Length: 169
Image 1 (tube, rainbow, N blue to C red):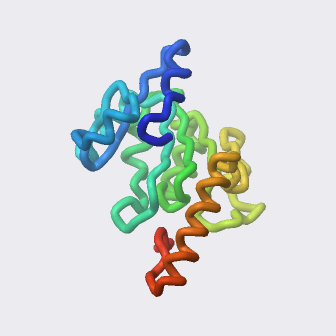
Image 2: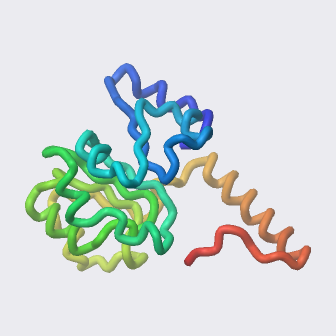
């Protein structure tokens, strides 16, 4: 979802409340997301306690590695779900496996993994409350246009002697 995206309005008839969690909830761009409420990182417990479906779509940095661990998973309400479309390392693998094995959260949708491709015998994949896709959840016509644009921009940057943008850590 990008600022100014009108997709949140499509969820309103279903009674969806959109909550955000960010370093700076007062940043002017946050208002453009159409969130019902936005929390700072130090308010994670308050935010997660109200979250039925937690969608992780942040980058993996040293500050976000294992952003969701046993404590954060326990804060989620009973019957909640975790969806990770960001990076596998955002979630503590052991904590997620243990929590899912106990049924809290109720399930997880994973499009990214700690090792890619994820080994077919990974114990997480054997859990009945896990749905896994091979890192294609974001593959849309729009994403391919954005990817092509980013590649073209990096080619131009390299041609001009500059470093590429968006390098993985």
